[in-house]
Image 1 (spheres, rainbow, N blue to C red):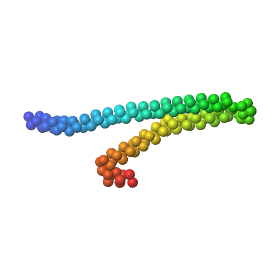
Image 2: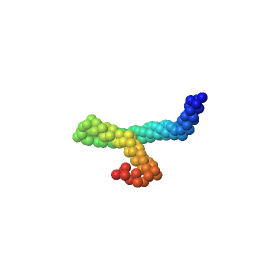
Image 3: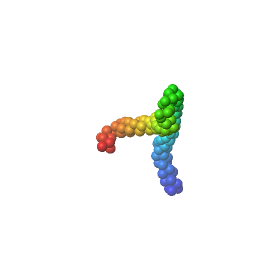
Length: 130
């Protein structure tokens, strides 16, 4: 009888500890899902925007090539020029899409980290940031 009473007492104490922990687990899970979804949409939308901008640049480049005189084509190798332009446009697309979104994400992480740190303990934040 004493053993059953002790087990019930221990089980009740464990349940009292588990209730706030379960709530925190749910909050962190929801925060992780929200972060994943927002990062996915951020990368997708920045990539889509970069793709559209590159499409417009390619159209303008094509119009520029078509407006050139015949002498320009005789003096310049059009294949070499188009290869250079294509490689530069790919670099611009990477910079506008993935890299720019990563810069925004990293700046937001730094700002939120310092904000959370200063709200918790400004002395600890100053020590950690140095």
